[in-house]
Each structure stands twice: as structure tokens, then as C-alpha cells.
Amino acid sequence: MSTAANTLDLSNYWMPFTANRQFKSQPRILVAAEGVHYTRDDGARLLDSSAGLWCVNAGHGRAEIAEAVHRQLLTLDYSPAFQMGQPGAFDFAARVARLAPEGLDRVFFTNSGSESVDTALKIALAYHKARGEGGRFRIIGREKGYNGVGFGGISVGGLVANRRQFAGQLLPSVDHLPHTFDLAKNAFSRGQPEHGAEKADVLEGLIALHGADSIAAVIVEPVAGSAGVLPPPKGYLEKLREITAKNGILLIFDEVITGFGRLGAPFAAHRFGVTPDIITCAKGITNGALPMGAVIVDRKVHDALMAGPDNVIELFHGYTYSGHPTACAAGMATLDIYEREGLLTRVKEIEKHFEDALHSLKGKPHIIDIRNIGLMGAIELKPREDGPGKRGYDLLVDCFNSGLLIRVSGDIVAISPPLIIEPAQIDEIVEKLGAALDRLK
Ligand code: PXG
Image 1 (cartoon, rainbow, N blue to C red):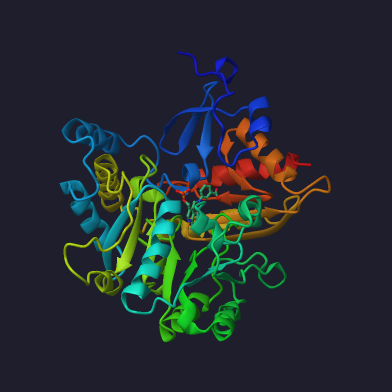
Image 2 (image 1 turned 90 degrees about the vertical axis):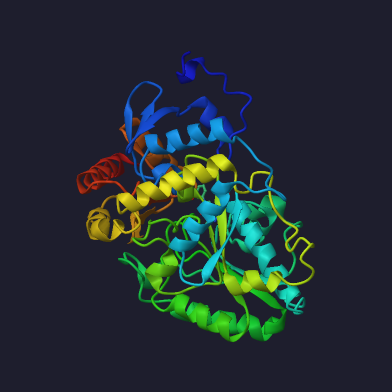
């Protein structure tokens, strides 16, 4: 079987978040992966600077995960998720709970980050209803937030491109905090920017406007990922926690990207010392090997729903594949690797090297900002006169052709390599990127 792009029929597959016609006229096909490298269909290797899509934290081709999934498929391929259990789901939930911040130890499984977000929003609404506060129906998201692509997620999210095609049918009763991006004050920040904690005070204004007793939850990414790596200003998350707690509002951290070691701790909540009521996660939970997500819930939120007659389903929600046996097996093997190889904290050791390497690009053509935290970095380019996103796309193509896989959204390059990356490989990413920037128009 040939996998070369020129022998593939590209017509049937409608690609997600892709300019399909542009792609199909100039396809980029990956056929294999190992460690921190992909292999293209022409056999050339690409250094993976984005851990796939921020998910392959332990690097590619981990045999241990493959073997666990293989064994599971032959033992119990599928079992009904509703009103039946399989050992793997209970074991894996206990394992995830042990990694989560203290108090968050009830785990609802989903199949993606988008499902985790929609699940978390539903749990927040159901929690307040169960406590007789059904008037709390409003949800506060944030501008520039990416919370997946379900109707809940795009409603609380704040990326206009993800919303405008569907405008008119977004969730009602949603409001947004302002984003924290401030190029004028924070350009070229290393780690958490100095300015912007006061943006959290806007929540007080929204509470004054809507009334605390109408607000169910606030959902934010601790570090905005898709918007182009926006670390929280110093003191910002602390303020959000203080204001939500004071007003009986649940705080949800969307940790689909930041979970499982990307910031040098199991979760961003640990890194920032701020504990939300609910964490959503996915991606790194199975090292990207199989689709899975989870919602990790404070026990008091969970327990509020465990009221009423015990023959009644407490939460009318779930998926055919919640706690799928293979996903749980992949997750167990993934956490074995993370723990054995110290990957949940390794980023602390390489973060400074990563930061210095990225910031060494300052002064290269077109760069208007470089920012970073943990093993997440962004390089923002000035959009070209002929249209936003074109310069970023040209850079993506040049890098692809010269042996580097980068993730570009618009004119922002996001760098988030697998957590196993070696310092010399970080240098190689930066070198290749620098050379491509020198060539870029
Ligand atoms: N929340 C956050 C914070 C995310 O980053 C989702 C929810 C949705 O997850 P699913 O599994 O439904 O895709 C995400 C996903 C990118 C990029 O390069 C980011 C995501 C997905 C694909 C690409 O910016 N984040």
C-alpha cells in the first residue's frame, strides 16, 4: 500500500479546522511517528514541536500503551457504560483522582475536551439545581477562550472565528470576562506577565450586573492555549478564586492543554496554587493515543447531586464510550510512563532552557511578541499586508518542508513539544524556526 500523497484520494475526507481546498492542492501527509519525530510520506523526518496537538506528552510510539490497548481489546473490547461497570474505569478514575488537587476526587469520563467542557457546564447547572439554587443558570466564560467546539464550549469560549458561523444558536445566558492579552504592557514577558490582574475584577462588575444568585460558574483556561499561549497575569487566578468563592459561584479550570505535566506539575491548579471546583481535561490523559477526556469534580459538588431516592439516576448525562475499556487501559499505561519517567514535573527542569531558547529569537523578522510558561510558548508575528494568517501559513509550510512541525493559528506560532524533549532538541526547534523566519516574507 502506498501512502504517498500523490496516490491518495483526498476527496472524501472533510478535514477539521483545515482550509480543505488549500490543503488538498498542497497536502501534508504524516505516516509514522516515534519519540519526538514524525515521518512524512516521502520518508523525511519532522521534529514535532507541538506534541501532535498538545497531547503526545510522553512522545510518540510508546509500546507500553499499544500493548495495554491490545491486551484490553482481546480481554474486554467494550462494555456498556450505563448501568454496568468494568474494572478499568474505576481503577483509572482512582488514579486520576490521586493526581488531582486535594478535594477533587470524583471523575466523570468523556471522549474529548469538548465533551469534558459541556459535561462540566451541565454538572455546574445540575449542582445548583440540586441545592435549590436553580436560579443560577448563567455561565461566565472569557474572551479569547477556547473551550472546545460543542455548543456549550463555543458559547463560553471567546474566539470569534469559532462562533460566528453558528451565531444565533449559542447558549443564552452566557457572559464573558475580558481576555488578559496586553501587548502594550506585557510584550516579551517571561512566565506570568506583571500586568492585568485587575481584569479579574471585571467579574465583580458582572456579578453586580447580573446578580450573584443568577451565576452558576466561571470557566477559564488557566493558561489560554489556542488563543496563542496567554499565561495568567500575576495574581489573576487568585482573584478569580476569591471572587467566585465569596459569591457561591463554581470555578472551572479548563485544563485540556495544561493538564498532565505541561506546566511542570500534574495540573495548572498545582502550579499556580489555585484550586478550582472542577477541572476539565483530555489530550495528555492518554498521551493522545486514544480519544478520552475527564471532568474532575470537587467531592462536595458531586455529593450535592447524590441526594434523592437512590434508584434515580443522579445526572442524566453520559456517552456510549464514557470510561471506554481501551481508553482506560491507554490512560493507565500513560500514567505509568508519566510517573516512572517523572514527566509530570520534568518541565520544571527544562523550562528555563526553553524560555531562553524561545526568547533568543527576539529581533528576528516580523516578531512582535514572544511569551512562554512551562513547556508552552508562542511567537506572534505581525500580520502581512495581504491578509492576516498568510504569513503564519507560509511559515508553517516552510518549516514542514525543512523538517519541523509547528502549530500555527493565524500569525501565532505555538510551541509545545512532547515533555520528553531534550535541551538540544529545543535548540534545534529554535534554530529551524529562526532560519525559516529569516526566509519569510
Ligand atoms: N478546551 C481546551 C482548553 C482546549 O485546548 C478543548 C477544550 C477541546 O478539546 P477537543 O478534544 O474536543 O479538541 C481544547 C482543544 C490548537 C488546538 O492548536 C487546540 C485544541 C485542539 C486542537 C488544536 O490550538 N484544543
